[in-house]
Length: 403
Image (cartoon, rainbow, N blue to C red; front, side, top):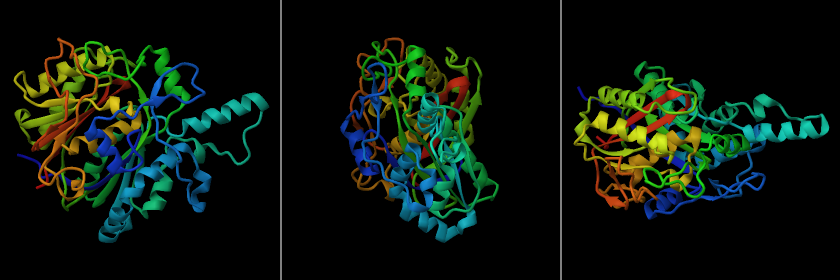
């Protein structure tokens, strides 16, 4: 039986493509990469998906929570303030929850404090780890800004963090804990991730080229992305969430794609949608040789050898935004659905679209999928977005067109 699902009534994003949702989607549709040189303190050359400055300062009441992560969150949330106020007014403060993900949190601030402590033996006056550098340090400011008093949680499962929060939101509404949930994720650039991926030999020497025969690694990015999921309303529908944990390796994917396929199978089963009806897949598609090969196997196994779904990776637009990737790419994949009210202004009425998978040509001959090299117009009824993380934390999200 097909799931009725829950509508996504609004969304907002900020990343390397733009400082607001309209700019982000315009850049995606136009096929523009937002990658820039890495921060100047990076001891090697690399391209990153950084958010263009300046970042807004927090209001005085939240100044003690100031960090780059929270500033990106504040920037991204701006387009959602009116829909959030409407949801709180409709359902009540205690019936709206927050489930958000992050991989690095405010690690940048922790790095700077650590560097100062090594130089001087002292931490900066007023620094408090829980408020300035903890993984969940952006949850309280979000609650305050949104006027939300329902359950609030932060999830950290590396690159699947802000995809897993959709499962939390769905469970909370299913169980009648809340009537609406603000889901999303935020991650900001820091040296831990840049140097860490460099040490793994996973950074690309240029712009990442997912699924290409010439791919050589990833770019790291930062972003904020939020979506409002409600019990009822108008918008594309969250139909199914599939989760798995294959625990194959701390940083390498299972080459068989077994765990990734299981997540997709579970999303299809939860939604009650046949695999053949999936028209578009936003792939995790990092651009590393092992990840893309694994995911191609998993997609064909889950959707069938005759699948005609178009497959795209958007990592070359924004960089891999780690804990913010799941929510960022959920917004991206919604553009392929027949537009509802929240999508108007970003696409012609009644027409969905699929972005080009930048840098994919020439596609690896071992990847037997329909990789979209150019922008494609046309709407799909059902779409899927994949997020796979270190340690084998896999999530697949399945969305449907507005009811």
